[in-house]
Amino acid sequence: MKIWDISPLIDGELKVWPGDTPMSREVVCELQKGASVTLSTLRATVHLGSHVDGPNHYGKGAAGVEAWPIERFLGPCHVLDAQTKRGIRARIEDVRWPDADLSGSDALRKIRLPRVLLKTGTYPDCREFNEDFAGLEPSLIDAMVARGVRTIGVDTPSVDSFSSKDLPAHAACLRGDVAIIEGLVLLDVPGGEYELIALPLKLAGFDASPVRAVLRG
Image 1: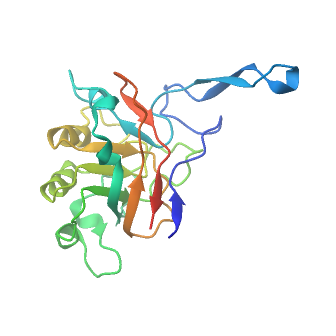
Image 2: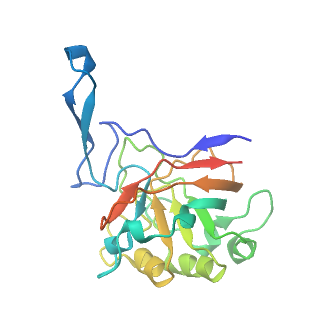
């Protein structure tokens, strides 16, 4: 069994959403300077690297990230290609089933697991923020919800396009009670079935939590 690390390295070079709080580390005390221990303070957006959105990030009056059932982020999942051009939203037609000549609705009908990670290939380097990454069409989210999907992960900073203000993909997730994982590193992961482990921190009332996301398979 192979383990795939699908989280980016968190350091000062990791890009965050423009205007959000980048990662910084303050060393409070350290062994090399005579202290008994090394202690650090982390300052950053909670939407850092691979992260789970809390419902209150996109739904008025919704719960924080701690309210998600933990099983949303632990268990079998599909990794599917949704290759599309930069600057547009991934559609139903863009989804490909691994190792089979199936795409679009035919591919979606093969979904039998509640967790799906989508590889758009439109955000290849987390140290270079490109604004033309692909969001998801709400109709694609609705179609996956109809197949029983309750967690959707993407290899981009958001399920919505960079310039979107009304956030229709987030709205579709809220409507379908779908948990969102953003910022995954899926470039080298072949499509297929895996075990997902991507547990958010139990941060009361927060609108997101970073995760260390891995796949086993």
